[in-house]
Image (tube, rainbow, N blue to C red; front, side):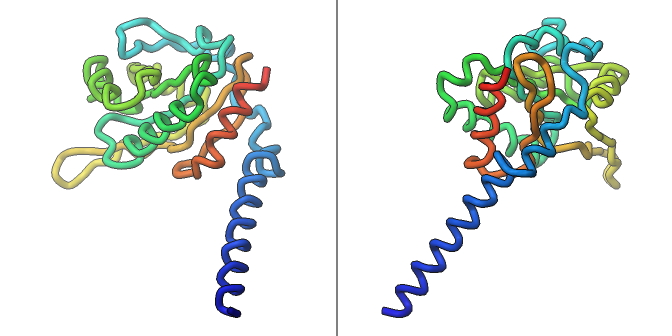
Amino acid sequence: MRSIVKTVGATIAILSATLALGWWQVDGPFEMRTEQNFRSSLSNMNFEMTSHLGKVVSPEYLVGNPTMFFFGFTYCPDVCPTTLAEISTWIEELGDLANSLNVVFITVDPARDDVKTVAEYLSNFNSKIEGWIGNSSQLAAAGNFFDVTYQRKESEDGTYTMDHSSSVFLYRSDGTFARTIDYHEPREVAVPKIKRTISEK
């Protein structure tokens, strides 16, 4: 009997800790820190790229709807496909709430990721995700505005990979920065963050 009580007590403690962590990240002090507008508003980002549909795009045209951004590349072995798969499940869970949400994947590998390559890659994920492709100078401008880092890493076999920021960036419908979702952040934390961003004006 005592062992059962101890097991139940341990389970309750774990659940309480999980809920507390979720509050800390979604509504607690951590959330307050990440809401500081230290990134540029979308309306102030003056760069253009090409979407995977072949259209000229820029952050300005996204203002009016909440937006989610993720930086990556199609040759990414794990972080990018994992995050894009998670984003796809978030979109599904949001249901009709996702109708107003822009979702943008910006490639950090302009040497290999052209429009066709990105279009084929994104066909594996939710159709709401739009790919943006730019040249080196356009990517540099985007990296500066979003405050992200990326770096080419050469391999001994003559190939290379790209190290890059792995967070998802959320912007309100007025174009101001809202918050981030960290890599592998639990769905129970990530989805409420998106809902809160969608509800904010």
